[in-house]
Image (cartoon, rainbow, N blue to C red; front, side, top):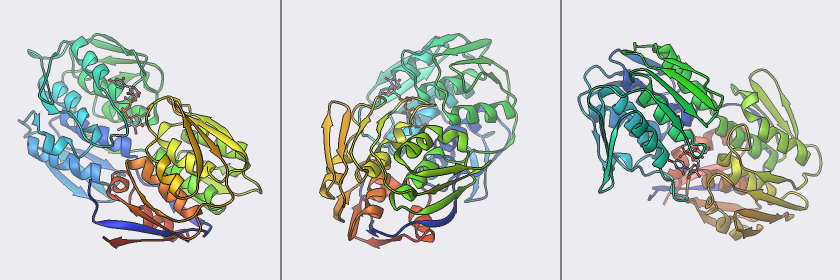
Length: 422
Ligand code: UD1
Protein backbone atom coordinates (compact mmCIF):
# COMPACT_ATOMS: atom_id res chain seq x y z
CA UNK A 1 0.00 0.00 0.00
CA UNK A 2 1.08 3.57 -0.44
CA UNK A 3 -1.09 6.19 1.23
CA UNK A 4 -1.35 9.78 0.10
CA UNK A 5 -1.63 11.21 3.58
CA UNK A 6 -0.47 10.76 7.15
CA UNK A 7 -2.44 11.12 10.36
CA UNK A 8 -1.19 13.45 13.08
CA UNK A 9 -2.36 12.93 16.65
CA UNK A 10 -1.48 15.14 19.60
CA UNK A 11 -2.14 12.89 22.55
CA UNK A 12 -3.33 13.58 26.06
CA UNK A 13 -6.90 14.80 25.42
CA UNK A 14 -9.63 12.78 27.15
CA UNK A 15 -12.38 11.73 24.76
CA UNK A 16 -15.73 13.01 25.97
CA UNK A 17 -19.22 12.86 24.46
CA UNK A 18 -21.45 10.62 22.36
CA UNK A 19 -20.74 8.83 19.12
CA UNK A 20 -22.72 6.50 16.86
CA UNK A 21 -21.03 3.46 15.34
CA UNK A 22 -21.22 2.61 11.65
CA UNK A 23 -22.53 -0.60 10.11
CA UNK A 24 -20.41 -3.73 10.36
CA UNK A 25 -17.53 -4.12 7.92
CA UNK A 26 -17.37 -7.89 8.24
CA UNK A 27 -21.11 -8.18 7.65
CA UNK A 28 -21.03 -5.78 4.70
CA UNK A 29 -18.35 -7.74 2.86
CA UNK A 30 -20.45 -10.92 3.15
CA UNK A 31 -23.89 -9.46 2.46
CA UNK A 32 -22.89 -7.54 -0.70
CA UNK A 33 -21.63 -10.67 -2.55
CA UNK A 34 -24.68 -12.58 -1.21
CA UNK A 35 -26.90 -10.30 -3.30
CA UNK A 36 -25.49 -12.15 -6.34
CA UNK A 37 -27.53 -15.17 -5.30
CA UNK A 38 -30.79 -13.76 -6.64
CA UNK A 39 -32.08 -12.12 -9.78
CA UNK A 40 -34.14 -9.43 -8.12
CA UNK A 41 -33.00 -6.18 -6.53
CA UNK A 42 -31.76 -6.22 -2.93
CA UNK A 43 -31.55 -3.02 -0.94
CA UNK A 44 -29.02 -2.96 1.88
CA UNK A 45 -28.86 -0.22 4.50
CA UNK A 46 -26.40 0.76 7.23
CA UNK A 47 -23.37 -0.19 5.15
CA UNK A 48 -20.11 1.36 6.33
CA UNK A 49 -18.67 3.77 3.76
CA UNK A 50 -15.25 2.12 3.55
CA UNK A 51 -12.77 1.09 0.88
CA UNK A 52 -13.73 -2.61 1.04
CA UNK A 53 -17.29 -1.65 0.03
CA UNK A 54 -16.04 0.34 -2.99
CA UNK A 55 -13.86 -2.60 -4.05
CA UNK A 56 -16.89 -4.91 -3.94
CA UNK A 57 -18.97 -2.47 -6.00
CA UNK A 58 -16.28 -2.56 -8.70
CA UNK A 59 -16.29 -6.37 -8.61
CA UNK A 60 -20.08 -6.66 -8.82
CA UNK A 61 -20.21 -4.20 -11.74
CA UNK A 62 -17.50 -6.11 -13.57
CA UNK A 63 -19.62 -9.25 -13.24
CA UNK A 64 -22.60 -7.44 -14.77
CA UNK A 65 -24.62 -6.33 -11.72
CA UNK A 66 -26.27 -2.92 -11.50
CA UNK A 67 -25.26 -1.20 -8.30
CA UNK A 68 -26.67 2.06 -7.03
CA UNK A 69 -24.90 3.32 -3.91
CA UNK A 70 -25.82 6.33 -1.82
CA UNK A 71 -23.27 6.38 1.03
CA UNK A 72 -24.75 6.42 4.54
CA UNK A 73 -28.17 5.60 3.05
CA UNK A 74 -28.46 2.48 0.94
CA UNK A 75 -27.03 0.23 -1.73
CA UNK A 76 -29.32 -1.32 -4.32
CA UNK A 77 -27.94 -4.35 -6.11
CA UNK A 78 -29.65 -5.86 -9.12
CA UNK A 79 -27.80 -9.01 -10.18
CA UNK A 80 -30.31 -10.07 -12.86
CA UNK A 81 -27.84 -9.21 -15.63
CA UNK A 82 -24.85 -11.02 -14.13
CA UNK A 83 -23.13 -13.31 -16.62
CA UNK A 84 -19.53 -13.00 -15.41
CA UNK A 85 -17.89 -15.49 -13.08
CA UNK A 86 -14.25 -14.41 -13.20
CA UNK A 87 -12.67 -11.96 -10.78
CA UNK A 88 -9.08 -10.92 -11.55
CA UNK A 89 -6.31 -10.26 -9.06
CA UNK A 90 -6.35 -6.53 -9.88
CA UNK A 91 -9.67 -6.46 -7.97
CA UNK A 92 -9.31 -9.27 -5.41
CA UNK A 93 -6.05 -7.76 -4.18
CA UNK A 94 -8.05 -4.83 -2.83
CA UNK A 95 -9.82 -6.80 -0.11
CA UNK A 96 -9.36 -9.95 1.87
CA UNK A 97 -13.03 -10.89 1.77
CA UNK A 98 -13.06 -11.09 -2.04
CA UNK A 99 -12.96 -14.86 -1.45
CA UNK A 100 -16.73 -14.66 -0.75
CA UNK A 101 -17.16 -14.23 -4.50
CA UNK A 102 -16.26 -17.91 -4.76
CA UNK A 103 -19.19 -19.07 -2.62
CA UNK A 104 -21.60 -16.51 -4.07
CA UNK A 105 -20.77 -17.26 -7.75
CA UNK A 106 -20.70 -21.01 -7.20
CA UNK A 107 -24.10 -20.75 -5.50
CA UNK A 108 -25.44 -18.58 -8.31
CA UNK A 109 -24.01 -20.11 -11.46
CA UNK A 110 -22.18 -23.28 -10.46
CA UNK A 111 -18.86 -21.81 -11.57
CA UNK A 112 -16.35 -19.27 -10.31
CA UNK A 113 -12.80 -18.23 -11.09
CA UNK A 114 -11.52 -15.92 -8.44
CA UNK A 115 -7.92 -14.86 -7.86
CA UNK A 116 -6.54 -15.35 -4.36
CA UNK A 117 -7.34 -12.34 -2.18
CA UNK A 118 -5.19 -9.48 -0.97
CA UNK A 119 -6.12 -7.32 2.03
CA UNK A 120 -4.40 -7.45 5.40
CA UNK A 121 -1.46 -9.83 5.24
CA UNK A 122 -0.48 -9.87 8.91
CA UNK A 123 0.19 -13.58 8.54
CA UNK A 124 -0.53 -16.53 6.30
CA UNK A 125 -4.30 -16.93 5.89
CA UNK A 126 -5.09 -20.21 4.12
CA UNK A 127 -8.51 -20.95 2.59
CA UNK A 128 -8.18 -24.73 2.46
CA UNK A 129 -11.30 -25.17 4.63
CA UNK A 130 -13.41 -23.05 2.25
CA UNK A 131 -12.26 -25.19 -0.68
CA UNK A 132 -12.84 -28.39 1.25
CA UNK A 133 -16.40 -27.20 1.92
CA UNK A 134 -17.06 -26.44 -1.75
CA UNK A 135 -15.68 -29.86 -2.71
CA UNK A 136 -18.05 -31.51 -0.21
CA UNK A 137 -20.92 -29.81 -2.05
CA UNK A 138 -19.74 -31.35 -5.31
CA UNK A 139 -17.57 -28.60 -6.78
CA UNK A 140 -14.44 -29.49 -8.70
CA UNK A 141 -11.65 -27.30 -7.44
CA UNK A 142 -8.53 -26.46 -9.36
CA UNK A 143 -6.06 -24.08 -7.95
CA UNK A 144 -3.45 -22.77 -10.40
CA UNK A 145 -1.43 -19.61 -10.94
CA UNK A 146 -3.01 -17.76 -8.06
CA UNK A 147 -6.60 -18.34 -9.23
CA UNK A 148 -9.17 -20.69 -7.70
CA UNK A 149 -11.27 -22.39 -10.40
CA UNK A 150 -14.42 -23.97 -8.98
CA UNK A 151 -17.21 -25.54 -11.00
CA UNK A 152 -19.97 -28.07 -10.95
CA UNK A 153 -22.33 -29.51 -13.54
CA UNK A 154 -25.71 -28.01 -12.75
CA UNK A 155 -26.46 -27.28 -9.08
CA UNK A 156 -24.25 -27.97 -6.08
CA UNK A 157 -25.47 -30.82 -3.86
CA UNK A 158 -26.09 -30.37 -0.14
CA UNK A 159 -23.83 -32.40 2.15
CA UNK A 160 -22.26 -32.49 5.61
CA UNK A 161 -19.27 -30.18 5.99
CA UNK A 162 -16.92 -30.66 8.95
CA UNK A 163 -14.43 -27.85 9.51
CA UNK A 164 -11.07 -28.83 11.01
CA UNK A 165 -10.68 -25.32 12.43
CA UNK A 166 -13.33 -22.81 13.37
CA UNK A 167 -13.28 -20.41 10.45
CA UNK A 168 -15.46 -17.36 9.98
CA UNK A 169 -14.68 -17.01 6.28
CA UNK A 170 -15.10 -20.73 5.62
CA UNK A 171 -18.46 -20.81 7.41
CA UNK A 172 -19.75 -17.83 5.44
CA UNK A 173 -18.45 -19.10 2.11
CA UNK A 174 -20.08 -22.52 2.53
CA UNK A 175 -23.35 -20.86 3.60
CA UNK A 176 -23.27 -18.78 0.40
CA UNK A 177 -22.63 -21.83 -1.75
CA UNK A 178 -25.19 -24.03 0.02
CA UNK A 179 -28.34 -21.90 0.15
CA UNK A 180 -29.25 -22.72 -3.46
CA UNK A 181 -27.76 -26.22 -3.51
CA UNK A 182 -29.94 -29.28 -4.05
CA UNK A 183 -30.80 -30.84 -0.68
CA UNK A 184 -29.55 -30.24 2.83
CA UNK A 185 -26.19 -29.02 4.06
CA UNK A 186 -25.05 -29.24 7.67
CA UNK A 187 -21.97 -27.25 8.71
CA UNK A 188 -20.30 -28.71 11.80
CA UNK A 189 -17.78 -26.76 13.91
CA UNK A 190 -19.15 -23.56 12.41
CA UNK A 191 -18.00 -20.12 13.60
CA UNK A 192 -20.51 -18.22 15.74
CA UNK A 193 -19.55 -14.57 15.15
CA UNK A 194 -22.39 -11.99 15.09
CA UNK A 195 -21.90 -11.34 11.38
CA UNK A 196 -22.58 -15.01 10.63
CA UNK A 197 -25.98 -14.61 12.27
CA UNK A 198 -26.47 -11.38 10.34
CA UNK A 199 -25.66 -13.05 7.03
CA UNK A 200 -28.07 -15.89 7.85
CA UNK A 201 -30.79 -13.31 8.56
CA UNK A 202 -30.07 -11.61 5.25
CA UNK A 203 -30.18 -14.90 3.35
CA UNK A 204 -33.41 -15.92 5.10
CA UNK A 205 -34.97 -12.59 4.23
CA UNK A 206 -34.19 -13.50 0.58
CA UNK A 207 -36.11 -16.76 1.04
CA UNK A 208 -33.26 -19.06 2.09
CA UNK A 209 -33.69 -21.67 4.80
CA UNK A 210 -30.74 -21.34 7.21
CA UNK A 211 -31.09 -22.49 10.81
CA UNK A 212 -28.67 -22.60 13.74
CA UNK A 213 -26.46 -19.61 12.83
CA UNK A 214 -24.84 -18.45 16.06
CA UNK A 215 -24.32 -22.06 17.20
CA UNK A 216 -21.63 -24.43 15.98
CA UNK A 217 -24.02 -26.45 13.80
CA UNK A 218 -25.69 -24.63 10.92
CA UNK A 219 -28.38 -26.42 8.91
CA UNK A 220 -29.26 -25.24 5.44
CA UNK A 221 -32.11 -26.56 3.35
CA UNK A 222 -31.31 -25.62 -0.25
CA UNK A 223 -33.94 -23.67 -2.20
CA UNK A 224 -34.15 -23.30 -5.95
CA UNK A 225 -34.52 -19.56 -6.07
CA UNK A 226 -34.12 -16.52 -3.84
CA UNK A 227 -36.01 -13.24 -4.04
CA UNK A 228 -35.04 -9.62 -3.45
CA UNK A 229 -35.21 -8.00 -0.01
CA UNK A 230 -34.55 -4.91 2.08
CA UNK A 231 -32.06 -5.36 4.86
CA UNK A 232 -30.03 -3.28 7.34
CA UNK A 233 -26.73 -4.72 8.54
CA UNK A 234 -25.77 -4.82 12.23
CA UNK A 235 -23.45 -2.24 13.81
CA UNK A 236 -19.72 -2.85 13.72
CA UNK A 237 -18.55 -4.88 16.70
CA UNK A 238 -14.90 -4.00 16.20
CA UNK A 239 -15.43 -0.28 15.70
CA UNK A 240 -17.47 -0.31 18.92
CA UNK A 241 -14.64 -2.08 20.72
CA UNK A 242 -12.00 0.26 19.30
CA UNK A 243 -13.98 3.28 20.55
CA UNK A 244 -14.42 1.66 23.98
CA UNK A 245 -10.67 1.08 24.19
CA UNK A 246 -9.91 4.63 22.99
CA UNK A 247 -12.26 6.03 25.65
CA UNK A 248 -10.52 3.99 28.36
CA UNK A 249 -7.06 4.89 27.00
CA UNK A 250 -7.70 8.63 27.27
CA UNK A 251 -9.53 8.30 30.60
CA UNK A 252 -12.49 9.93 28.96
CA UNK A 253 -16.25 9.58 29.27
CA UNK A 254 -17.77 8.29 26.04
CA UNK A 255 -21.21 6.94 25.22
CA UNK A 256 -21.22 4.75 22.13
CA UNK A 257 -24.66 4.67 20.54
CA UNK A 258 -26.25 2.31 18.03
CA UNK A 259 -24.17 -0.68 19.14
CA UNK A 260 -25.11 -4.14 20.41
CA UNK A 261 -23.72 -4.45 23.97
CA UNK A 262 -24.08 -8.26 24.08
CA UNK A 263 -21.56 -8.53 21.22
CA UNK A 264 -19.03 -6.72 23.39
CA UNK A 265 -19.11 -8.87 26.51
CA UNK A 266 -15.55 -10.26 26.29
CA UNK A 267 -14.09 -6.75 26.02
CA UNK A 268 -16.43 -5.27 28.60
CA UNK A 269 -15.37 -7.95 31.09
CA UNK A 270 -11.67 -7.15 30.52
CA UNK A 271 -12.20 -3.40 30.88
CA UNK A 272 -14.10 -3.95 34.13
CA UNK A 273 -11.26 -6.18 35.35
CA UNK A 274 -8.81 -3.34 34.58
CA UNK A 275 -10.86 -0.97 36.72
CA UNK A 276 -12.62 0.91 33.91
CA UNK A 277 -16.30 1.69 34.46
CA UNK A 278 -18.52 0.29 31.70
CA UNK A 279 -22.30 0.60 31.76
CA UNK A 280 -24.71 -0.77 29.18
CA UNK A 281 -28.15 0.13 27.90
CA UNK A 282 -30.19 -1.57 25.18
CA UNK A 283 -28.17 -0.09 22.32
CA UNK A 284 -25.46 1.97 23.96
CA UNK A 285 -22.37 1.55 26.09
CA UNK A 286 -20.79 4.19 28.32
CA UNK A 287 -17.10 3.95 29.22
CA UNK A 288 -15.66 6.04 32.08
CA UNK A 289 -12.44 5.85 34.10
CA UNK A 290 -12.36 4.86 37.76
CA UNK A 291 -8.85 5.47 39.12
CA UNK A 292 -5.90 3.19 38.41
CA UNK A 293 -6.08 0.88 35.38
CA UNK A 294 -4.69 -2.52 36.30
CA UNK A 295 -2.79 -5.00 34.13
CA UNK A 296 -4.84 -7.98 32.89
CA UNK A 297 -4.29 -11.18 30.92
CA UNK A 298 -6.04 -11.50 27.57
CA UNK A 299 -6.35 -14.52 25.29
CA UNK A 300 -7.98 -14.20 21.90
CA UNK A 301 -10.60 -16.78 21.02
CA UNK A 302 -13.34 -17.33 18.50
CA UNK A 303 -16.66 -15.67 19.40
CA UNK A 304 -17.86 -15.28 22.14
CA UNK A 305 -14.24 -15.09 23.32
CA UNK A 306 -12.03 -12.03 23.12
CA UNK A 307 -11.86 -11.07 19.39
CA UNK A 308 -8.50 -11.21 17.66
CA UNK A 309 -9.50 -8.01 15.85
CA UNK A 310 -9.32 -6.16 19.19
CA UNK A 311 -6.05 -7.76 20.29
CA UNK A 312 -3.88 -5.02 18.78
CA UNK A 313 -5.77 -1.97 20.16
CA UNK A 314 -6.07 -3.76 23.54
CA UNK A 315 -2.29 -4.28 23.58
CA UNK A 316 -1.85 -0.53 23.06
CA UNK A 317 -4.20 0.23 25.96
CA UNK A 318 -2.33 -2.16 28.28
CA UNK A 319 0.99 -0.39 27.55
CA UNK A 320 0.03 2.13 30.25
CA UNK A 321 -1.81 -0.18 32.69
CA UNK A 322 -0.23 -0.69 36.10
CA UNK A 323 1.67 -3.98 36.31
CA UNK A 324 2.51 -6.70 33.80
CA UNK A 325 -0.15 -7.80 31.31
CA UNK A 326 -0.09 -10.70 28.89
CA UNK A 327 -1.87 -10.87 25.56
CA UNK A 328 -1.97 -14.31 23.99
CA UNK A 329 -3.00 -14.56 20.32
CA UNK A 330 -4.49 -17.95 19.50
CA UNK A 331 -6.35 -17.18 16.25
CA UNK A 332 -3.68 -15.64 14.00
CA UNK A 333 -0.29 -16.68 15.34
CA UNK A 334 1.73 -13.91 13.72
CA UNK A 335 -0.56 -10.94 14.27
CA UNK A 336 2.16 -8.86 15.95
CA UNK A 337 3.48 -6.41 13.38
CA UNK A 338 2.28 -3.49 15.51
CA UNK A 339 4.67 -4.27 18.37
CA UNK A 340 7.77 -2.65 16.85
CA UNK A 341 5.80 0.53 16.23
CA UNK A 342 4.51 0.61 19.83
CA UNK A 343 8.11 0.18 21.02
CA UNK A 344 9.07 3.33 19.10
CA UNK A 345 6.56 5.14 21.31
CA UNK A 346 8.15 3.89 24.52
CA UNK A 347 6.12 0.71 25.15
CA UNK A 348 7.90 -2.02 27.11
CA UNK A 349 6.84 -5.15 25.29
CA UNK A 350 8.35 -8.57 24.76
CA UNK A 351 7.02 -11.23 22.42
CA UNK A 352 7.38 -14.82 23.56
CA UNK A 353 6.05 -17.30 21.05
CA UNK A 354 2.47 -16.03 20.60
CA UNK A 355 2.19 -14.15 23.89
CA UNK A 356 3.02 -10.47 24.37
CA UNK A 357 4.37 -9.48 27.78
CA UNK A 358 3.59 -5.86 28.51
CA UNK A 359 5.17 -3.96 31.36
CA UNK A 360 2.98 -0.91 31.95
CA UNK A 361 4.82 2.44 31.63
CA UNK A 362 3.82 5.86 32.99
CA UNK A 363 4.25 7.55 29.67
CA UNK A 364 4.20 6.86 25.95
CA UNK A 365 5.59 9.51 23.63
CA UNK A 366 4.62 10.53 20.12
CA UNK A 367 6.78 9.17 17.30
CA UNK A 368 6.54 8.53 13.56
CA UNK A 369 5.01 5.07 13.05
CA UNK A 370 3.78 2.98 10.13
CA UNK A 371 0.56 0.98 9.88
CA UNK A 372 1.05 -2.59 8.66
CA UNK A 373 -2.57 -3.80 8.72
CA UNK A 374 -6.03 -2.53 9.60
CA UNK A 375 -6.15 -3.34 13.32
CA UNK A 376 -2.49 -2.41 13.80
CA UNK A 377 -3.70 1.00 12.61
CA UNK A 378 -6.33 1.03 15.36
CA UNK A 379 -3.63 0.16 17.91
CA UNK A 380 -1.44 3.05 16.77
CA UNK A 381 -4.36 5.49 16.97
CA UNK A 382 -5.06 4.33 20.55
CA UNK A 383 -1.37 4.72 21.43
CA UNK A 384 -1.25 8.14 19.76
CA UNK A 385 -4.25 9.33 21.77
CA UNK A 386 -2.47 8.31 25.02
CA UNK A 387 1.01 9.55 24.10
CA UNK A 388 2.68 12.80 25.03
CA UNK A 389 3.39 14.91 21.96
CA UNK A 390 2.67 14.25 18.31
CA UNK A 391 2.35 10.80 16.71
CA UNK A 392 2.67 10.68 12.93
CA UNK A 393 0.91 7.68 11.44
CA UNK A 394 1.89 6.57 7.92
CA UNK A 395 0.05 4.15 5.58
CA UNK A 396 -3.38 5.35 6.70
CA UNK A 397 -5.16 3.62 3.81
CA UNK A 398 -5.10 0.39 5.84
CA UNK A 399 -7.19 2.21 8.45
CA UNK A 400 -9.65 3.44 5.80
CA UNK A 401 -10.28 -0.16 4.76
CA UNK A 402 -12.23 -0.74 7.97
CA UNK A 403 -13.04 2.48 9.82
CA UNK A 404 -15.40 5.15 8.52
CA UNK A 405 -13.72 8.56 8.83
CA UNK A 406 -12.31 7.59 12.19
CA UNK A 407 -10.51 10.91 12.65
CA UNK A 408 -13.78 12.87 12.30
CA UNK A 409 -15.43 10.69 14.94
CA UNK A 410 -12.51 11.06 17.34
CA UNK A 411 -12.28 14.80 16.72
CA UNK A 412 -15.96 15.11 17.60
CA UNK A 413 -15.06 13.54 20.95
CA UNK A 414 -12.27 16.06 21.56
CA UNK A 415 -9.20 14.34 20.09
CA UNK A 416 -6.57 16.45 18.37
CA UNK A 417 -6.23 14.46 15.18
CA UNK A 418 -5.91 15.48 11.54
CA UNK A 419 -4.60 14.33 8.17
CA UNK A 420 -1.93 15.96 6.11
CA UNK A 421 -0.81 15.13 2.59
CA UNK A 422 2.60 13.50 2.47
C1 UD1 B 1 -12.49 -13.20 9.76
C2 UD1 B 1 -12.64 -11.70 9.87
C3 UD1 B 1 -11.42 -11.11 10.53
C4 UD1 B 1 -11.15 -11.79 11.86
C5 UD1 B 1 -11.16 -13.32 11.74
C6 UD1 B 1 -11.13 -14.01 13.07
C7 UD1 B 1 -14.05 -11.14 8.01
C8 UD1 B 1 -14.16 -10.55 6.66
N1 UD1 B 1 -12.83 -11.17 8.54
O1 UD1 B 1 -11.34 -13.45 8.96
O2 UD1 B 1 -11.64 -9.72 10.71
O3 UD1 B 1 -9.89 -11.39 12.34
O4 UD1 B 1 -12.35 -13.76 11.06
O5 UD1 B 1 -12.17 -13.60 13.87
O6 UD1 B 1 -15.04 -11.53 8.59
N2 UD1 B 1 -7.94 -21.04 8.73
C9 UD1 B 1 -7.42 -22.16 8.11
N3 UD1 B 1 -7.96 -22.57 6.93
C10 UD1 B 1 -9.01 -21.92 6.34
C11 UD1 B 1 -9.54 -20.77 6.98
C12 UD1 B 1 -8.99 -20.36 8.17
O7 UD1 B 1 -6.48 -22.76 8.62
O8 UD1 B 1 -9.45 -22.35 5.27
C13 UD1 B 1 -7.38 -20.57 10.02
C14 UD1 B 1 -6.75 -19.18 9.91
O9 UD1 B 1 -5.40 -19.25 9.48
C15 UD1 B 1 -6.87 -18.69 11.32
C16 UD1 B 1 -8.20 -19.31 11.79
O10 UD1 B 1 -8.46 -20.39 10.92
O11 UD1 B 1 -5.85 -19.18 12.13
C17 UD1 B 1 -9.39 -18.36 11.77
O12 UD1 B 1 -9.49 -17.74 10.51
P1 UD1 B 1 -10.90 -17.25 9.92
O13 UD1 B 1 -11.92 -17.31 11.00
O14 UD1 B 1 -11.14 -17.99 8.67
O15 UD1 B 1 -10.61 -15.73 9.58
P2 UD1 B 1 -11.13 -14.91 8.33
O16 UD1 B 1 -12.44 -15.42 7.87
O17 UD1 B 1 -10.02 -14.77 7.33
